[in-house]
Length: 168
Image (tube, rainbow, N blue to C red; front, side):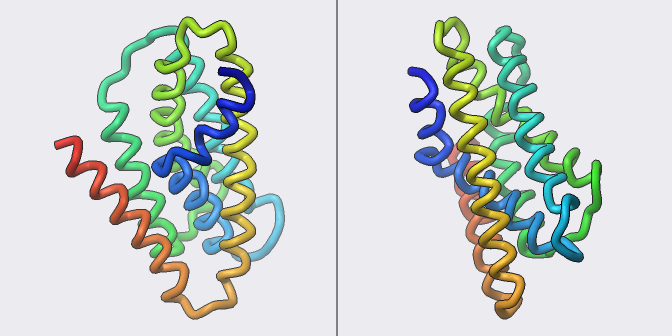
C-alpha cells in the first residue's frame, strides 16, 4: 500500500481507466476552443473523487456504489458520443456526482489503512494524468471524422452496460 499502489490502481482498473479517460475525451471534444474551460470536467471529477474517498474512509455507508460506477461509464460514454456541450460548473457537477461513487469505493477499501492518505494521493495523481491523457487524445480526435471518437464513447457505454448486467 502507499502512493505507488494508489497510482497504479486507476491505471489497472478498467472501469476507473475508462471513466477517467472518457471525462477528458468529452471535455476536449465538446469544447468550443482551448483554454481553462476544458478543465471543468476533469477538476470536478478529481475533486469529488477526493470528497467521496474521504467519506468512504469515515465508513459512512452510501448505497449503490458499484451500480453508480457502472452508470458513470454509461453517462461519460454517451457524453463522448454526443459531444454534448455543457459549460462550467454544470460539467463539473455532471461528472462529479459519479466521481463521488468512485471515491467511495476507494475510501471503503482503504478504511483503517495507515497509508490511506498516501494511497489516495497516488490515486488522485493518476486520475489527473488520465484526465490529461483523455484531453490530449480528445483534442487530437477533434480533427478526425466524427465517427472515430464516437466509437470510443460507444465502447465505454458498452463496457458500462456489461458491468451493470453483471451486477443485476
